[in-house]
Each structure stands twice: as C-alpha cells, then as structure tokens.
Amino acid sequence: MFIEALGVQDRVKNLGTAPSIVSACLQELLEDVIKPFDEGNSTSTDEQEQSNAVVFSMPGGEDTNTTNTVVSTEYLEPSALGRSEWIKFFAAFFNAEERANTAFESIESNYDCFTKKAGEEYDDLRPVVAWTSYAGPTEYNNNTAYWQISFADYKYDLVRDAGARMLNTTGAQATMFSTAAAFLDALEEVDIVIDESFVSYSYDELLKNYGVKDPSKSTYSWVTASRVFRPDRLQSTAGGLDWFEAPVAFADALLQDVIGVAHPKFVKDGYQPIWFRNLADNEPVVVVSASNCTDMYAQRKDPAESCSSLTFQEANPDDEDYEGVDENQTDDLIYDISKSEIINESDSDSSDGAFLSVNALQATAAVAFIALCAAM
Image (cartoon, rainbow, N blue to C red; front, side):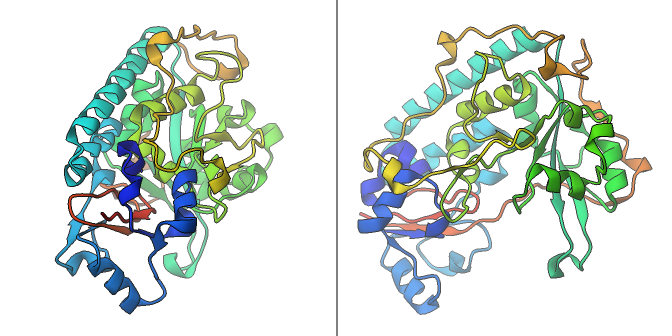
C-alpha cells in the first residue's frame, strides 16, 4: 500500500499473492503491466526476484537469503501512526523522501485532531471494545478449538484515541481460552466486539462459535445492542482483505473508522466505516475490482475526512448505540485472567507476511498478507 501512498506504481515490476490484492489500481496494473510472481515455480520465482535490484520481504520469507532482499517489519510497530510512518523508510528507495514527509505530516496532524476531538466529546461515555477471534478445530491446532482476545498495542492506542475503553488483562498482547464459557466470561462487560477470525462467517455462525446459544435471552450488551463488527468490508474477488493494506498506510483513516464503530453518529447519522461492517446487522462486503480504478498511476489519496472541518456530535447516553455502556468510566476494563481456563498468553500479536521486489532505488512494502514488488 505504501507504493500507492507514494505514487510510484509505474516502477512496480512484480507482485506476490496477486489474487489477494484489494487495491483497484494495482489490480488493473496486474492485468497488463505488472507481472505476478510465478509462485508455483520456485525456479521462476527466483529468476524474477534476481531481476530486481531490491526485494522487500517479511521476516522468515524464503527469499530472505538473497542479496537484494530488504526485510520490513512495519506490522510490529506498537502504534498505528508508527506503522504509517514506514512510508519514510520505503520512500528512501524511490528518492521520494519529501513526498513521504509531506504525506505523513498530514496523516499525523489529522490523527491528532481526531484524537483530541474524540477525547473532548466522548470522555464521559466510552464503550468497552474487545478484539476477538475464533479458531475451529483443525490439523494445525491439534483439532482443538480456541478463542482469543487480542490486546495488541496499536489496537489499544486506537481504542483509547477513539474515545472508547479497551478490554485488557495483565499486559499480555493476546490471551487464548480453551472453552467458550471462559471466553464469554471475559466478554461479560464488553459493549463492542470486533471479530478478526480468519474465516468469515455469518452472525448466527459467530454466535454459535462463541457459545451464545439463545441471543434473544442474552445479557451481553454487544449482542443485545447488535454491535459485532468485522474488518472485512473491502475485499478482492479472491477474498483478500483491504484491512491488511490501506489502514497500515493511513492511520488517520483507521482511527476515523474505529471512532465510527465506537460512536456511530460521531459526524452524522448513518456514518459508513471504510473497513468495518456490522455483522449483526448483516451489512454486506464490498468487492473491489480493477474497474473501480480511475488512474492507476496516481498517488493514492488519504481516504480519511479532514478532521478540522468536522463537527462531532455529542454522545447521548439514551441513544440505542450506547445501550449497556457505563457512563463516566474512562479506565480500561481489566479482566482477571487468573480465574479462567487459559491456553496461553502471548507477548506478540503477529501477522502473516509475504514478499515483494523492486529495482534499484525504487520500492514498496509488504503489508500483512500482501506481497508487493517494484522495479525501474
């Protein structure tokens, strides 16, 4: 995604995991200009990599032993702004430092404005947010299902900066539960659930997987108020998620989205998040295709609104959006993990990665599941 934020798509030579790419203009470039890596043929892929001056990879990629590989770790940054600032790193390979500095300064200023306004308007009415996921039994987990709550640092910052509270434990980045009952116990006082399960499913399937047997009798406010979200609104035709692309480069737009989840009427009634969809309301996914591109070589515009031009609506505790939300609570909701059936705690909230390659002094970034390549 940094390649489009810098506007250097004309230098791209190869792309990895091409079917998963959501960007409309990169999809269009793949039709006629960019060649995808021949990932089914290791010899061919090696030749493609060697034809580039620089190959960008995530740690652990098979290509990391080549002499032209640069490893990027923006996904390890503890803040959303920190992830977006990696645009400066990639800009150095394109001699585009000035463009990168201008872009990041704008993102940072807009992010700070959103944080300030959300803090002023919503300090007395902060819903509790939990980032969750479910993994069904497979050969990869010894055929044992588990439930997880993520406490990744960048998510914590986003929630706090959005005028909400984070479900937290004792400092671990993620906690896995061995039973649905223990998992639900941790979600007892949660107002909003953001489900990040790898496999997409319906709301009814989510409730079943989470162990909610009869939602009509549920006392969980995230169920009764229908506030269950997934960050999978924008997808490629192959099911790739833009969640792993654009939000990394545009932290201000990501924060705007989280504010929209926590406070749906923060700008106007019916605010439509960019990446989140309300699963409980059966909101549909939006499939992005090459036909959505208007200029495949243009520098990608920041999708965030200009915060300084917005007037945030005051939160109304009587609004249905805040059903069950405790007023005048600003601290995190701390869950005592010592009383639960925990599989383990992790100090990391890792993402899968792939690779990309570029020719001399011209590069872009591998973002989560996306792999990009660039060339002269």
